[in-house]
Length: 486
Image (cartoon, rainbow, N blue to C red; front, side, top):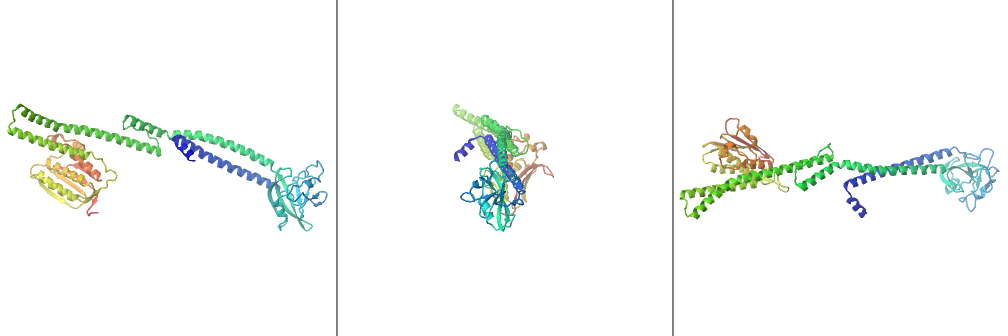
């Protein structure tokens, strides 16, 4: 059994599906054929029994067992043996007289044969049980038996009274024609079943090939991607069944992988571009210092101090840029097994405002912060709020006002600076994107991308736009949560 199971599992999916289809059809055909055979058999046997119901229940008028018309004789050994002795009393070559060969059994278990019968019916225990029973006259039972020559017959055994005693009358109907019809029917059903199984195998193969065609296409595409690493390939989708859903899911996965690779490629290209500027500046300053030492002409102290200050600023810019890149290198969604913790967003906002005060000492901050607890990454959310406040500080006019509000999960940060042009709002969350008017200011263009990713990972939304009542920029963050710590 294990060997057969292993062999079956080693077949291709198309072959297994074809074999299972053929097996299912074969079982259905076999059961149908078997049921049909038994139904026909029952009907044929019922027809024979119906014919036997018309046979006489007793000897014809004017005759009696033991007379010349019904010679009686004891059977050899017992009443269960064949009636050879009684048959021997019949004249040789006596033609068959009645419609049914009739045979009576006397109370002393002797067999009485009707003149004209050319075969005696073999007496069985069913006949003797009926003879010895106390059933009412006319009671009959059907059973199968044989003539003494071995021919199968259907027997109707019935009781009748004679001279105060109970006799049993046997009437027989040959079953040769019925058995022949059943044999022919069995052969026909067997042939039809064999043709059905073969047809089911061929049909199953065709159905498997047609049904698994999308799987073959999917396999081809997967093998192509594995061989060429060209993600983004898709297969056509037809219908809405399970195969179509699998194809759609694969297309979505392939497209997502292609988009992920594109984003990765753009990130690497943009990061290389952004890193090139401070690195080039650092290399220039370092080369200048080395050349000054090698030539023995030291730089003026003021120039040297300025160069070192520039190098420090460039190193800080590199540090911030690398930190931003590490932040963005995380997956767009939490990894499996990373359960977000409960974060007090109002405390994060308070800490971020304190840091923003240090970076904008001349600015005025208006606060309206209420408790709000959310589920998320505390470090990522704090970085997001700090980035929003850094933007507000950077673009606020001297002695300007920054408004920070946290009410019912809605965090807003508003500055009164020049604002963002309407046609540039669609790009503000793109990585490394910077407005043409602000490219001279420090920054890498990654701050708002980090904000969008942190808020999205926490199940929230973020948007930037113009305030409804004046100049500036209004940043709005909505995060699901509650006012009490869960």
